[in-house]
Structure formats: structure tokens, C-alpha cells
Length: 590
Ligand code: ADP
Image (cartoon, rainbow, N blue to C red; front, side):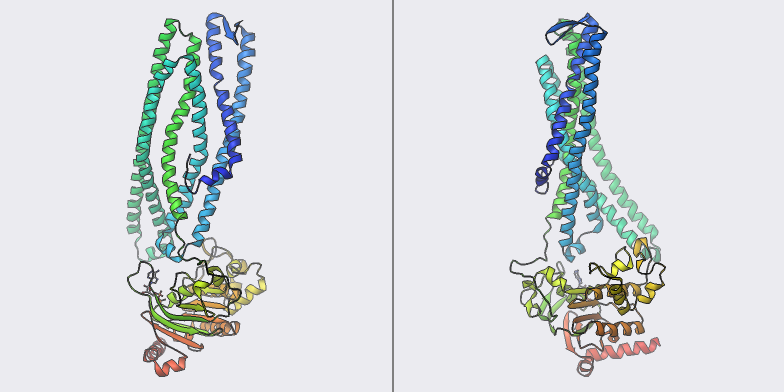
């Protein structure tokens, strides 16, 4: 059995299933201990021609064998078979349900965790938590309950019957068994460590495989398949070594267990024969004793298996608990309240921001205002802090009090969920789900109509391309479907954001992969569709932002100037330089 903060509650939740399973298990255990009595009846009866049953001496003939041995034995076996089926369904079923519930809890936690967590944590590690570790915990729960109670009842009942027959022989048999449990306990601690190493090695391997498959195009383009193969082999070897180390110790434990069990059989046969020769035991009683001993072997082996399982389960549950205990670093303050409406004004007031674990500020003393309904361009070189501005508005990271305001309210006083509800975002990587184009565009809106989706697609200038696909809007994207170009991906992402019709729309470098004519079309459509709503366009091309109401020029995390295109050209040398440089590039391009 396995206990811990995140698992204890499930013993209560599935108490009915567990109690039913245990009732069946105990009944089966009891039925099992009736079988050795049959051995005695048959051996003593065959030996002496008569046998003592319920205090009455009965003659041993085929009618007796049929009535008192075969028929009861048949019913006991049928009972055991059905009983085993029942407890397996109940106890293993509860384990499977716990796995499902824990997985749900873990997924919910993962959904709450911030971008910072995902930039730190590797996806392969998370995947192995959701598969390998959860399976181990499930096994420990269902099989753990079964083994614990089986060891207690079947072991207890058989030992009780053995004691009643001959206490000295029972004690002799128990000495090696006690040694076996002691060895298992010592080895168990070591096994927990080995299991942790094994799980980590598997996580590293999953991580590497996941990353290699995602970056396969880069690997091929740089002809680095062999280098990757060597790296994979090394990790695979590490995984193999960790597996071998664990298997070695668990096999060693198994060998010990077999040794102890076999040595007890020696004791029982030797001492039992002595008792028969002394006339203290009949041959049938020795058979009965051996029958009980056979019934006791499994519970005692279950104890060692339980110790091994517990070692694995503890390590895996710790990894699962670590995930469930990861602090959600971007969360609502107790004073934060939902907002009913967002008009869309944004103010950065002397914002200085450093990413967790970074050595320098991504934004220093940044101040600018965006009025509700304005279209604002944020421009600057790579690394100047443009995406950071979007990250902070979307509350991907925490900001200091009194520095970032939406509709005049400090963002720390607005619940993260409700603020994000009023924002739409086109991320730089334009991530699309492996789903139909329709579902990708309609992602933010439940019950979206075909017409709404098509309108959004037309505004982002992708409708023509979609109609060119054989299944049109029902075309599957990604792994199971078509692969689209970078520009098409950008436009589908823009359509998805436009569908939301949010008070604040942020597009992060979202038209960089489309040609200038398409860019012009999209920006003109955006201006019409976003009339009266705030739109932030992060870009590095002047052509993307020149006609917007306002442009914020960032450099090295600082605001260089804020104004319209004409104002900036007239008064800001850095901006004028950018304009001249890009004009020159365009000319050269022509
Ligand atoms: P831009 O969008 O203008 O290219 P960013 O806002 O992405 O620039 O980045 C600003 C600075 O912050 C850069 O120096 C970048 O290296 C750093 N940065 C961005 N994201 C992170 C992160 N998650 N952790 C640490 N540093 C980051």
C-alpha cells in the first residue's frame, strides 16, 4: 500500500469498492485454508481405511471421498475462482480509478503552471510522469491493498492453523521467513534509490527522443543524424544501465526469497518426518501442515514484493507530488477581482522586469500608454523586449505593484483569468493543434458557425488557401494532416485570434512570413475589424506599423520614443535610421 498527501483521500473516495474487494479477498483466503484439511482426510483415510471427521470416525470409501472431498472441493474451487474475479475487479479497478483521478489532478495543475515552468521543465519528463510514474502508483494502490490484506488474512489464518497443529514446527519455519522480511526491508531502501535513477534515465531518454523528432528538419538539414544517433545511444545505454542495476537488485532479492522459502521446506519435511516417526503426527497431518505452509508462502512472498513495489511507488509518488506541489507563480492575489468589461487602455508605468533566473533586465523603466481602441505598433531590434511587453500584458509573469495598468486598474488587482478573457493573442511560434482548420480557427469560441470562421479567415487573407485544400475547412492540420507554410500558419493563427473579437488583441511578429501585399491586406482588414478595440502589433518591419495610431520604439529593454510614424521620423534619429535602412533594403531587394 502507498500513502501520501495526494493519495490518502482516494482510500476514502473508493472505500465501497475497496471494502467489497476486501470482503471477497478474505472469503477466498478462508476458502483456501479449507483445502489442506482435504489432504489429511485423503492421506489418513487411504493409509488407515478410516478417518476422523467432525469428531466422528468414518470409514474411508469412494462414497466418503465423493461426498466429503470431491463435491466440497469442487464448490470451494468454484467459489475461489469467482471470488478472485470479484476482488480483482474491485481492487485493481480502484487502482485504475485513482490513476485516472491523479492524472486529471496533474493535468489541471499543469494547465495552471506559468510559462516559466514550461521553459524550465522538459516535456519528455512530464510525459514520463503522466505514463510511467502514474502506472507505478496505480499498481501500488490496487495490488498494494490486495497484497497487504492477503498477507494479513491468508498468512494469519494459515499460521494460526499451523500453530494449532504444532507450535514448535511453526516457529522453526518462521525464523527464515523473518530473516527474509528483514533482508527485504534493508534492500527496499536501496531499491527506492535505484528506481528513482531508473525513472530519471527514462525521462531523459523520452526528452531526447521528443526533441529529436520535433527538430528532425534541423537535424537533417545540418546532416547531424549520426551525432544524434550517438547521443541517443549514450542515453539509451544510461537507461539500460539504470534498468540493469534495478533488475539486478530485485533479482537478488528474489533469489534470497526463494532460498529462504526452500530452506523452510527442508525444515518442515525434516522435523515433520521426525514427528511422524515419533507418532506425534499422522502422515495426513503432515500433508495438512505442508498445505498450510504452501498457503503461507504466497503471503510472505507478497510481503517482499510489497516492499519492492512500495519502494518503486514511493519514488514515483514523490515525482508526482513534486509536480502537484509546484507553486503556481502567476496567480490571483486575495484582493484580485474579476472584471466585467475591459475597454482596452494599457499603461506601462516605469516597468522594470527581469525573467526568473536571468542575469539582466529584459525591460528597464519602460513607460508608455495605449488608449482604448488604439492600434499601436511595438517595434525594435531582436531582443529589445517586444515579446516581453506582450508576456506581461497577458500575465504570463508577475509584475510589481503600481507598474502595469489595464483600464486604469493595477493588473495585480484583476483576476488573471478574467483579464486573459478579454485578450486575444497571436504568438510568435503560431502554434496550431493537430485538428481541423475549422476547429483551430474556432478554438476560442464555443459553437462557432461556419460563417464566423470563414469571415475571420477572409480577414486574415487565408480563406483562398483553405478553399484550395481538398477538405477545405475540415482539412486536418499537423501530424495527422496537411503541413502548411509559415505564412499560412501565421494567417490561420491571426484568424483564430480575430474570432475571439477581444478588447485587446496582441499580434507578435505575426505578418513577418507573408509578402508585402498580403501584409497590407491583413493590416487594412485588421483596422476595419478592430475599429474601437485595442490592437498591439509587434513587428520589426516599418511597413507593418507605419499607418498605426502610435508606435513604441524599444531598444535594449528601454523605450526610445513613442509617437506616430511621421512624428518619429521627424524627431527620433534611431527610428529615422531604421526607416532609411529598411527602405534601402527594399530597394536592393527590388
Ligand atoms: P524581442 O521580442 O524584442 O525579440 P524578447 O522580449 O523576447 O525580445 O526578449 C527580451 C530579452 O529577454 C532578451 O534579451 C531575451 O534573451 C530575454 N528573454 C526572453 N525570454 C526569456 C526567458 N524566458 N528567460 C530569460 N530571458 C528571456
